[in-house]
Image 1 (cartoon, rainbow, N blue to C red):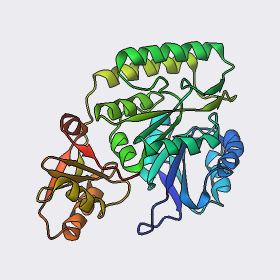
Image 2: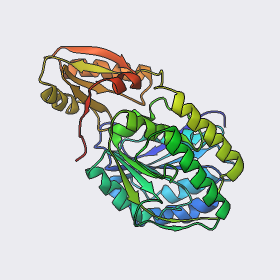
Image 3: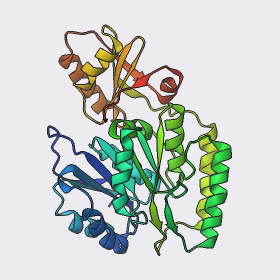
Image 4: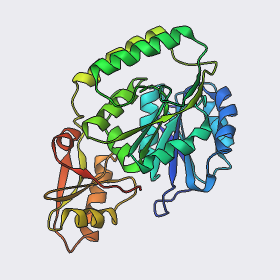
Length: 336
């Protein structure tokens, strides 16, 4: 297989978005997915959830196991990457496919209790970003590897010294976002392996987004794909790059509405775009942006906006995250 393959069930372009899109990255996880997906399906509201499994170039039948266990889900996506590209690349691919009002991701081994999704998603009532943390008060952690515990603590200290983040545990693979915020934060990300969480959370911090730290029940599951020494060194390098690298060059296309009160303009634009699109307001007006959308498809969305808001003057824009960081934008609270 030399190309991406996408299998989607349910969720036609004109249908209402699911409440939750849940991304599960998987590399040679046939055995653990066979146990984990049934656990997951027992706790999620199936009619409101879109499960997205991203097979990251597996060679052990991961896709077949995922396909079999997801068959009973009304809405699901199986995306197969042509080669192993890294956990960050797999999660990013899943976020691109996601259509939910809320977008979350969790590890295929279900090391974090799937039942904790209720509390994780609930935290989004207060903040646009919810971070599962093994360091949060109330967490229950069963880690059998002393070496990994030591390396994890060392890595956390390095992250704390390199980037300023309000969460103490960046590497717990259990996070949730307002859908529009997830698309914005993952747009053009460049860290493909395990330190991608640091890049995403650093972007959130630079944009001034609040983050809610959520306690988890986490258990060490046998068969981890993480090499404590090799991957830890690679993660340190990626964090260093994140520290000095500014926002991505990939532009985000959209439209600006400047002939309305900013808040009224934001409401108007929000009524015309998808749940996963980003709407922001500022003193001069409001913006609708289409992150995680290829330029050609974004151009089609922009033209569609011209017709939907024909009575107002729209300006076509192409911004990057650095522009958003430096501006006094207020992010539309699409999810209450």
